[in-house]
Length: 145
Image 1 (cartoon, one colour):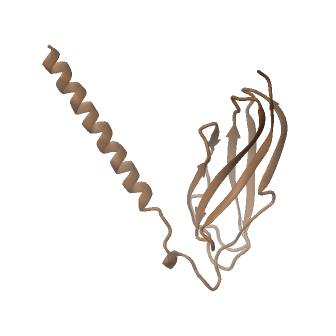
Image 2 (cartoon, rainbow, N blue to C red):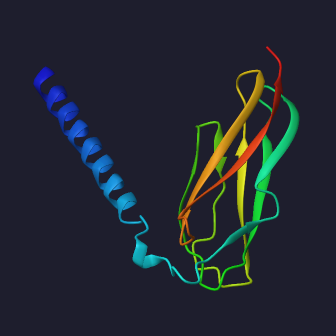
Image 3 (cartoon, rainbow, N blue to C red):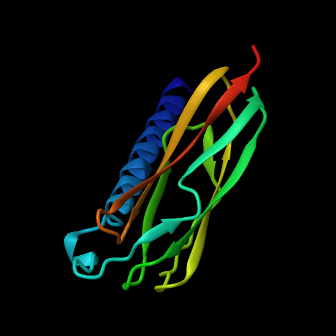
C-alpha cells in the first residue's frame, strides 16, 4: 500500500513539474523581439491616467480601477503580457487582439491590501511599443490593523 501511494505521489510530482515547464515555455513564446516593433512608427500606449491614486482604503477593501489607453502610434498595438508586481493585485483581462491606431483599450485591475500604510504597486505591460515595457502604477494609503 505504501509503495502504491509513493508511486502515485511521484507521478503527480512529475506531472506538476512538467506542467510548470510547459507553462513557462508558452510564456516565453509571447516575448517581443525587435522585429515585432515598427521602429520608425511604433505603437504608442497613451493612458488617460498611468498613475492612479486610490486615496485611503481599509485593509481587505477591494479597489477596482481600469487603466484606459489609446494607441496614438501609427502601427497596430499588440499586448503580449500584463503582470502585477504582487499577488494582491488581480488582473481582470486585457485586449488580446491588435489595437489599431486611434483605437482604445482597457486593462481592469483589482487591488486588495492586506497590510496598513502607504503603498505603491506597479503593473508591467509588454507590448509592441518602443520601449516594449510600459509600466502603470497605483498608490494610496491603507488604514487598519
